[in-house]
Length: 323
Image 1 (cartoon, rainbow, N blue to C red):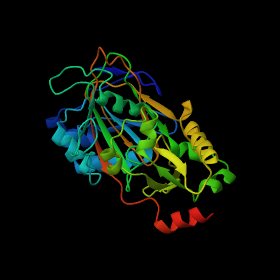
Image 2 (cartoon, rainbow, N blue to C red; image 1 turned 90 degrees about the vertical axis):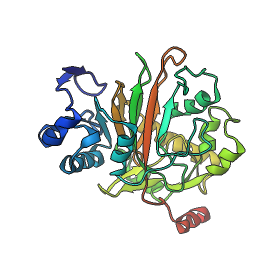
Image 3 (cartoon, rainbow, N blue to C red; image 1 turned 180 degrees about the vertical axis):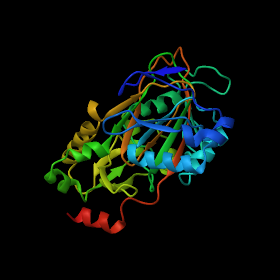
Image 4 (cartoon, rainbow, N blue to C red; image 1 turned 60 degrees about the horizontal axis):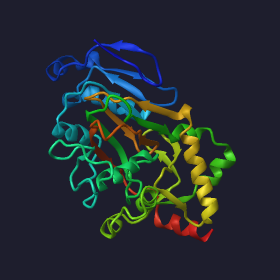
């Protein structure tokens, strides 16, 4: 029997997850969804994602839209099964071809181990680039169609550190005053990967990489269609507000980022091998926490579910620029 302690929640023992074979006949009786935070995040037990039936998938999907972050422990899931489960939520993004970590497919391998199993030096370009994951961000907000969701699976984890933190912009939006909501309602924000990575190293991105991911404009306020709830949409890639002076723009973005990342809106996940966590990029920020990468491997794989379309139409941008 496995005991697990969560940063938000209590210490408890849960029954071991079902095997894939057991899941075929018993999953509908065993799946259990338990909230682990006051505003968002839930733990899902009693199901193997490599072999989840339609009824349980509908329960998982509904829980995802309600809680925004779902945690699954002890998953026996291959890379192909990981991709197949992700595709049940929608089309997948392909990773960027010019990403220093390697790209061009549906799975992003994130870690500090090379193809031969050796630890990558901390000053290697791949590690420097991935250090940007320590910034609060939402995946793919710098793309024309930003991501809907991400699913991250733990293959190797260090004995301490290396946690992933999630912050709920949706819950933070609910605390804004009526005047603050009116101020941000129709704003358009330019999201720029080169801007966020410049905080790590101004020379990090090659010209080909910059060409592949030029700045993109996104709505400051989004509505999650499955729930009708509003959220602001910021993070480290949010560089500037269209039509605003630089200082005023930066001040508002920084304030909203700080609001969302207050402790009451944050869930910290302490990884165990074979954990899978999925989150809603439309309303959640996340960041990776440091660990002793010179001594211990941390190897993860991620799929990213593409969004349904642009968040802002050209006419809205033009109207914003005139104000």
